[in-house]
Image (cartoon, rainbow, N blue to C red):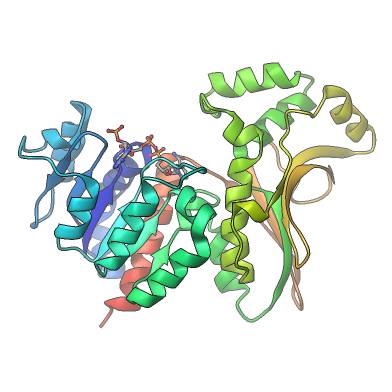
Length: 335
Ligand SMILES: NC(=O)c1ccc[n+]([C@@H]2O[C@H](COP(=O)([O-])OP(=O)(O)OC[C@H]3O[C@@H](n4cnc5c(N)ncnc54)[C@H](OP(=O)(O)O)[C@@H]3O)[C@@H](O)[C@H]2O)c1
């Protein structure tokens, strides 16, 4: 399978390393031999119809850009997506929850030129999920996005496949590891400000931490899940969102006295789509600590099931991309 990789940061490079370490068993177990025929970052591109040498590509990136791979002319992502022959485009550029760009344009160009898309970028899906799925169907291609929710933890697949015969009525959970880390530290007695500083120091919170603390990241994941798992047609504007910056140590203390903890809960049922700090019993399986994510699905006949796992990380997310790639190949190219 020929693949175009757009974005070569933490996730893109982890994916290249994963392919290097898994090439033998990917072929023997899944009959799949992915070839990265083009890779683009914000400063350049590398193209080879025979497949880029991934060790060399990673070495070129160490010098600043994948454009150093052969020091040939560089092309912008849209030109590469539209003109390089490939079956799949993997979108790993930065998430923008206001405009969805540059990811939305990359995804649209890929689908219009008949390429399947795997996106780890939440922006395009959070802002335009229904129309992107429509465009994928119109062009007869698949759009997959396992890595956008739960990192390597198969939250979307669990709901969509393992609970296939049942009807999911609602779900709720912790979808953002950074805010969960901050709230867990507040349980230990830190103020909101010191817990946030600690999260930044450990690399869990971005420079623009409001994306996490104001609940935007959790809301984006909630939108993706509600569309995919519940068949809704919703976007970011449909989510009622409250972040955690108003949570005080005294609130956390009062919750503790009732054997509860305050968690940033994202919830979806037929009436509401909501992200807000919520008191949760410590006996509830979704009451996980640190950077973990947890989601409980309530279904008509099989009751409640909870899935727990690490919510982010380069290699974890790369493994979700590989899962999507195998699904695309099994659906479209298996003989
Ligand atoms: N890291 C995680 O654990 C994780 C988990 C789940 C989902 N995600 C999502 O995955 C995506 C990538 O995350 P990351 O951590 O790999 O980010 P990153 O390290 O910041 O990498 C982003 C990559 O995109 C490139 N880029 C920026 N603007 C571009 C443009 N206009 N066209 C093409 N490439 C462009 C950057 O180029 P330069 O290298 O030249 O700057 C860089 O290679 C994001 O949307 C993120 O939200 C990340």
